[in-house]
Length: 225
Image 1 (cartoon, helix red, strand yellow):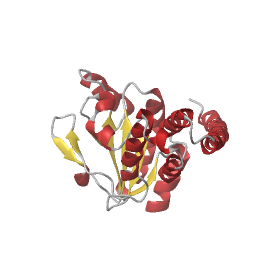
Image 2 (cartoon, one colour; image 1 turned 135 degrees about the vertical axis):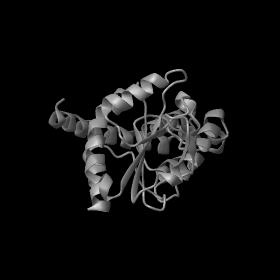
Image 3 (tube, one colour; image 1 turned 90 degrees about the vertical axis):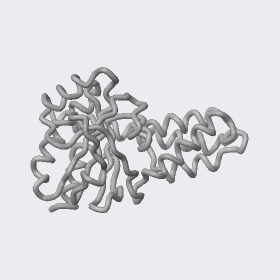
């Protein structure tokens, strides 16, 4: 309930993450023959601490034996998926059920700017961020901002998904396959942690990813003001 303190903590967290990322990059670069390097790289990808191209470069510098290991093959597959949703790529098209049970396609939800927002009723950071997104949507929807919420709620828990939408005042469009992390849209977008956001232009091209708070507001303002 203290936005100033929250921003201060987020800034400190960012500084710590950047420091760790630099150390991890150095470890991977200096130890291309080690399976531990692949494990560190996998952990870094979960944390989205680098761009897709930077992850790709670190992976390509690993020894062939490491790349052909089980973890190496999984990393390569993850990187290929991430490339499909990198900034500058056309967002993968999808269709998924709305709360009313109808299919909603991404192409039918596009505005001048569209946020594809991966979240869930059980995700506390998502719920904390929701008031910021509501405020942004109310301010910019008439100027062309659309949002499509993609929930990673679990099978049999549709009621929790719908209650969270109502409780948080999320008046934009929503879809969910109610398949948790195995949901086809989450798989398609290689979503491995939430909240996760993809910001699209009017042609469905990804122009930014994983922005929250003031960074998200600044990007939307830049495009629509």
